[in-house]
Image 1 (cartoon, rainbow, N blue to C red):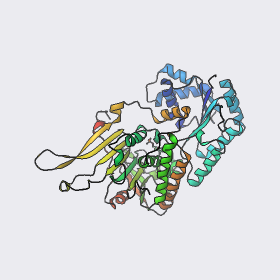
Image 2 (image 1 turned 60 degrees about the vertical axis):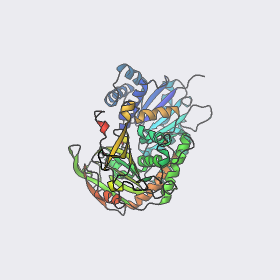
Image 3 (image 1 turned 30 degrees about the vertical axis):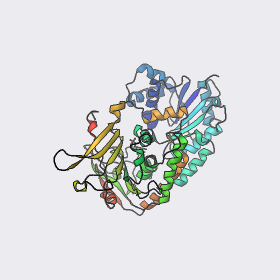
Image 4 (image 1 turned 180 degrees about the horizontal axis):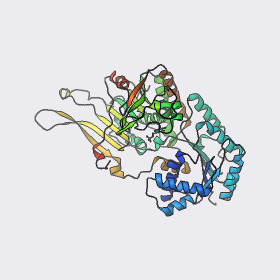
Length: 499
Ligand code: BG6
């Protein structure tokens, strides 16, 4: 049978996501020979321009943003697959024109092509664009023996549970879950993908991953960036919607899930959803602190306060920092607190998951004050894992010191693991949904965050100095339980990497 032509359509093709992430990712895939010969990339936006103009802009962006050195011959090959099509997204009739355009470039009826719609548009437009694609005969439910039709889009998946449900039902009116690829780019980070292997392929860790051995777990997603040019979006979102509802809930559910029946996407997601439901069941104690960055010094440069960033509303009460404590109502995690914190304009960029183990059950060396053992999973930067344990300092007396054993991902596997979008574009074309978010994950994460959002209305927003680790109230939150945040630090192997 003749191979179907494949058309990848980027809506919002003049935007940041397309230029910084998608086009460079396509270049990587071209270099790795991962693109079908018959693939065309149709870039769609409102602006008037020709394919030639767009190809030139795309080449410039790829040269600028590609993480690998660009070979001009390969770039030319990629760019020859790219077409530009102007479309006013609200113009329902325009979509018939898009269908004719696809037929022209593919030489096939558009319904006979494999179609992937990548909607890099505000979430308020997603239902409308998809509905119009349906009316033009471009989007339809998967039928046996017919070429596939898939959509992919990024968070935010709604503003709260209600709007997320509305968005989802409008999508489900057109497509089935198997055709929907919701992107959470954290899932494509190598150390996040490694979590299941770490937990379930290692008999030295797996039996200890529960309430009997673990004292508590911390998850930190710290950024040095401020809101950049996204003030209008961010001011309506805040840290809880922007990062907690998606990236942090994904990390938390992967860390806390029970063993799945298999590594099939659905089996893994079933376990993750059980965790999210158990968090909701355990109820939110209201233990949290929120903050907003004031001015300060980040990475040696003076930065402005959130309140004076462009597009931020006067007297905005939006949180740029949130720290909270959650519990999980399950046998595995009874009485084990999970402390989560995320914020912008903090001291360092760092995403870490920290497993803090309990003390040994009998205090043979308690006089020498051994520290609790710890496993630090460095999602970024300095991808890797550090185990901290106690060792005897040489000498006659028993003096105990805390020592570290490191696994440096890049030292072992090299610097070139695929970046998030390189992996995600490959997977959507291969029809693999493992790294994408299923609807019930989104829904249950919103159920948790909706409750948290209700709580923050009652809380004081603390202004913290940019370039610090956030408001003091976050330290108090964990100190109440006799614990403290583990400060991200540069591992010993950073030097070896020249970072
Ligand atoms: C995005 C958020 O989802 O994740 C941004 O909208 C945040 O506000 C970004 O900066 C962080 O991603 P990463 O990969 O840089 O940790």
